[in-house]
Length: 389
Image (cartoon, rainbow, N blue to C red; front, side, top):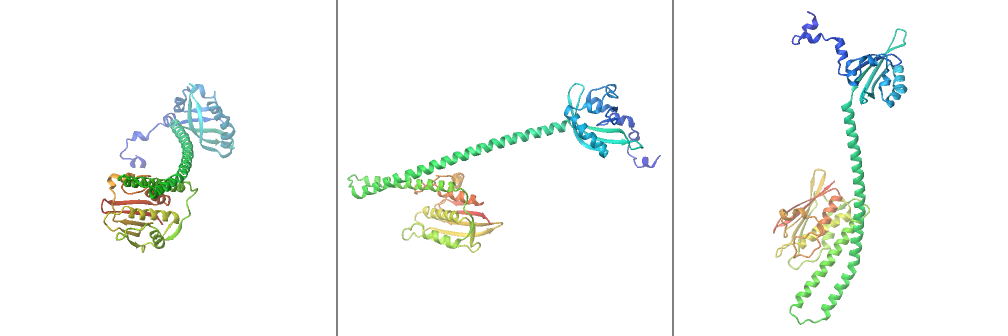
């Protein structure tokens, strides 16, 4: 027993006695040998089975290039064969063989050139691998890529159409709000003059006049809201970011807030120690804070002095700006999904256009941040703006 046999104690020794001819004939790949001019002189049974030929139909009767498709034959004779002579081997050349029944067999070809003692070409040994499944997979990938490109082009065209439609809508809304504002202002002026000069004997007239005045103010508020939204969306590009001191900006906004009834003046707490400044477009930051602070006053709980706290905090990679009030609060389980939608109002008894929170959400997201809200009806609301540093 040989040393090699001692190393294989658990194997059936018959497995080590394979017939080399059988291995060649029934290998899982195609083998063939050609003369330097390409004439086939040897071919294994695997390749014959793939192509559907009998051995005697090919040996000494056809060359390898004759089994290739027209394009493959041209490439083999002008590129592969010269390269084989030059460097003695070629690797992973992709060709298609013609079967006897006219079908096509995609293969990868590896070849080596053997020379005689004088260095003259003697025989070309070729190995062929069936890549039918691989070719099918590549074709599937190509079709998927073409479909994806077609869909991407379709989406691009749809996006262009949507952009044009949005621009048209913006132009329409801007023009409509601009054209409506003057007639409504004129109507409000005429109504004011009517209230000043006319005398009404009907006891219900005063209440009706108040309702008309409230409706006019609501119309003006909605028109102003529409104008502001469209102006924001019509800006060609976002305003440049800058570092803005929060204390000075917030105090400036507070000074511009509407005055409150005596005894109901809001108490503001400002604490920016954790982050005294924010990097954001100043106009956008001003609009965000102005809307949140004016809402905190507008939706104060009747009979309770408004207390509004504006603070900053640090978070990983971000600065947090919190605006907290003790006002009416919101039922987030009921209204949370539509909180930042345009023209949504949740306290109908309080005048407003439903634009403020939409703008807050839009401007914060344009700055790369996000808005979180917590609220308890009757106790108050906290808006938390998380902005990247």
